[in-house]
Amino acid sequence: MAFLKEFKEFALKGNVMDMAVGVIIGGAFGKIVTSLVNDVLMPIISLPLGSTNFSDLSVTLREAVEATETTPAVAEVVWKYGAFLQQCLDFIILAFCVFLMVKMMNKLSKKKEAAPAPAPEPPKPTKDQELLAEIRDLLKEKR
Image (cartoon, rainbow, N blue to C red; front, side, top):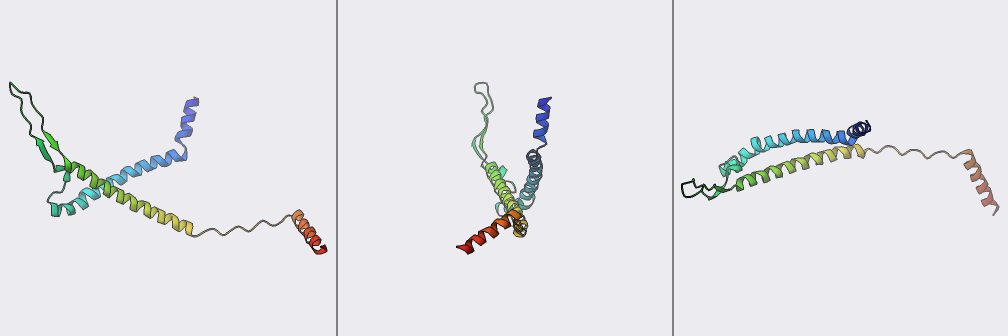
């Protein structure tokens, strides 16, 4: 039972809940960025290049050889540089979107901080402190 109690305390802490919300929002944000890349940016990029998907770009380094009675089958070796380029482009766009989102969040949080709360008034001296101040002032006058 102590284990379950510890787990409940851990799972319901604010940091864990914030992280869970972040993961869910991150997944949804990833889908938005994927749609931005595939549906908005790639058609524009493909106009001069002639291909909407870089993943199709590849170079065959070795053709496949079918098995015969005397030789075994040899698989085709393909250098899929287009898939790498596509992932790099997706990453750059995702990183840029995250950068813009963080920049916007920082701007919003600075606006909240820009209006500082008025400084609290210093506490009034106690009767003992007032009496000690009067005694100090009288001693200064005698000197």
